[in-house]
Image (cartoon, rainbow, N blue to C red):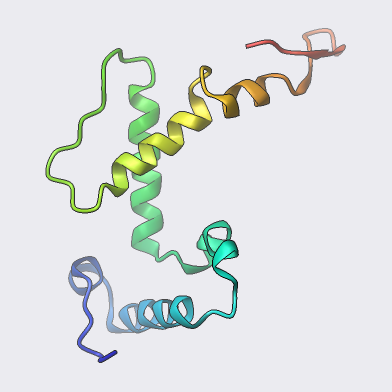
Length: 120
């Protein structure tokens, strides 16, 4: 791979040192001894500042629309990453999904401090 790689976000908003660090992270991801079955679970090791900021922004946006009825439609997306994030957020926050249902059944304490199970 040559050093002509560029990312519009890093090119426009990052210092040369930060771009070099991003390239090093990319190289580490490509050459990691980690098995392919582990990489998704360890993705935080390879996130850039800009990537993490975008995920946090999408999370904040999702929280703002939780109580708004309707559908989410994204137009003009490249790979559909934001829609994938919204789908993941839905599995975390939507009570109809299994992830939310299972977390609703975790032990909790009521107002008097008694241990109970919450039902969603």
